[in-house]
Amino acid sequence: MKKQELINKIQGGLIVSCQALEDEPLHSSFIMGRMAYAAQLGGAVGIRANSVEDIREIQKTTDLPIIGIIKKVYPGCKAKITPTIAEVDALVQTGVEIIAMDASTRPRPDGRSVAETFPPIREKYPEQLFMADCATYEEALRAEKLGFDFIGTTLNGYTDDTRHMPPPNFDFMHQLATGLQTPVIAEGGIFSPEQLRQAMDQGVLACVVGSAITRPMKITEHYVKVLRKD
Image 1 (tube, helix red, strand yellow):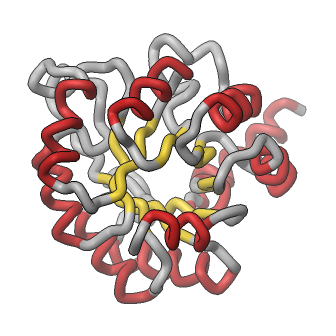
Image 2 (cartoon, rainbow, N blue to C red):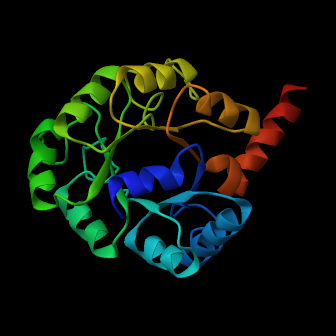
């Protein structure tokens, strides 16, 4: 799918993140496939998914564009979202429309920065669309200069230097949407329809919602937390 065609398809819409980590009750490629199918029936314009296995299962159940990632933990490395070219190689083989990568200042497992890591990847896969998961405006600017096709607010509030800014950070969304030429996809902490509307109103291309839709354990915790306050 060409970039403009993809932009037209997801513009102004909801992308549902269908992910369950190994320590979660719904960890299952089959379940994530059904989650994605339910999201499509509900009106989602895209899916964000983790792992080759989940992506291939989701491709069986939906025809929505997919933002693919591989969360990989390397010893001593805080960058976990598609941190090396090995994960990119695996994702390219699935045919996902977009591959998202950690584009923060955190070094990759080999100690190199995203500015050193991404250019060879772009050269190897010139037709593949890439999304930069960022935590700060400076990271987003660098990602734009590096040639990422989309910028995500994904990591804002989750890195050491942004933990004082709990998501959803609507000011950050607005800053990126108005300060960059690259399309911005809002992601992180959106937990209600009202917050989704507010995020979209910041001028972003589309929004990703995950936990509030596809992670019942987190949703239950959200409700129980209110009771405990009482």
